[in-house]
Amino acid sequence: MNNPQEHFKKVISHAKEYGFVFQSSEVYDGLSAVYDYGQNGVELKKNIRDYWWKAMVQMNTNIVGLDAAIFMHPTTWKASGHVDAFNDPLIDNKDSKKRYRADVLVEDYCAKIEQKIEKEAKKGKKRFGEGFDEVEFLATNGRVLGYRKKIDAILKRLGKSLGEEDLADVKALIEELEIADPVSGSRNWTDVKQFNLMFGTKLGASADSAMDLYLRPETAQGIFVNFLNVQKTGRMKIPFGIAQTGKAFRNEIVARQFIFRMREFEQMEMQFFIKPGTQSKWYNHWKQARLKWHLSLGMGESNYRFHNHEKLAHYADSAADIEFKFPFGFKELEGIHSRTDFDLSQHEKYAGKKLQFFDPEENKNYTPYVLETSIGLDRMFLAVFSNSLQEEALENNSSRTVLKIPSVLSPYKAAVLPLVKKDGLPEIAQTILKDLQWDFNVIYDEKDAVGRRYRRQDAIGTPFCVTVDHQTLEDNTVTLRYRDSMEQIRVDKKEISKIINQEVSAKNWLNKL
Ligand code: GAP
Image 1 (spheres, rainbow, N blue to C red):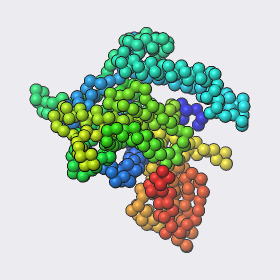
Image 2: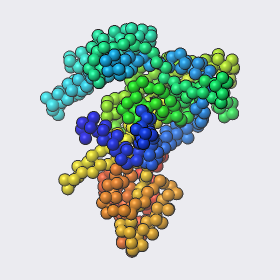
Image 3: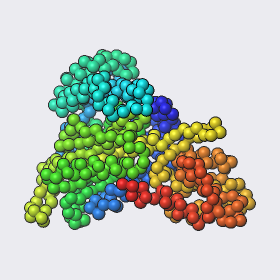
Image 4: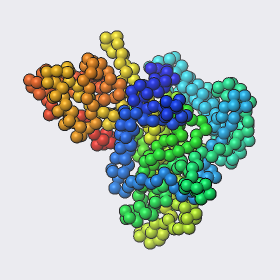
């Protein structure tokens, strides 16, 4: 599966075929950029959430959890700046009538130049063979440096014009770069306009007394408005963090690339409250800590990179993304933002209440600064899923489709399979299943030949298959098959749980940090 576009198509179809992700309201022809998670998807999603929660909340004594409501007082969003500034610059093509994010059109243009750089590197590798030093080549090759300079100049100008709200210059940039509508090829563009991404709704029964509300576009504000509640009741001392996972909603203009950009999605966010002036230290700390969390899953160091922001959100004094190599290229997976005291100060101002911390060491009150880590759960799902899906050639000229999901995240940790549906084998398999169920999510399958059952488990990423056969009747041993190597070993029934636990426990995976 070398072709990334083909691979991405396979990811989408596999996700549906094996009960991971369905289009929302499919019977009504679906709802754009809204998805449902099926029986296997819900388990994978939960396991990713748990892996994050374990590392973030349960392994840090100074970080606690929260589950704030999705509905919040509407002034929250005025204070946070979302009413006035949570906009995307949009542009319409007059011929195709298609709507685009102006900044995404420019970024896609830069991604194409990036592809040219990759092509140059490939050519170099082919020409110089074994002795090719890619890092040296990328740092010195004239053509590559030219491309890099062009990308930097474009992104710098885009960042400046967006920062200064100079939308005419964003349009001028699109025209100068001769960017065409990807669908129709037309360059007949409207002016660039700002478009607010929040969904509105109403609270209350009668039209005149109803209150205008927003569906939260990020979970973070629920943490800010609860800062003092948690600090006081939990007797937390700075530095400390509050973490939460939950749904967020954005009326994305360009919703595409499957679950990468959705209108309803889930975030896993942590706000770390710190002493003003220490933000640079904590910014670097959390950048590294979060990268390590990703690397612990073993999905390949070269699939991650940092992207430091030129254009900062209205609340940040520095920000970086951890980007992941999705099938459509490197894209943002997680953000690390130094949010200063912007949010707490704004809520103090709009609510007319102090949101400060009394620092006993300094013997004074201050409004803490905040370091945020924010990752999209659905995006992490896509990263794991697309990276794990592999088509493997086998020795006997056949092939298998296997989801090599990091086993700590696999929907099922083991499948229990009686070799045949008779001779008392299903009964023994059921006893093993019942026993394993206490510790792991396990599945039972007795239909079809065992080879086909192995393939079914490979396709949903189950790391172990436990097969009960006639020898089990004699000596209480079973066959344990490993998903990745397809190796089969004979073990005593009593050993199964220990072996599985060794491979799938979050402790062992996170200990790699
Ligand atoms: N509280 C900060 C915040 O919300 P963000 O960069 O807008 O920052 C954080 O979003 C993360 O949420 C992103 O890195 C991404 O993983 C995820 N995310 C944002 N918009 C999304 C969307 N429309 N669909 C899926 N995930 C999204």
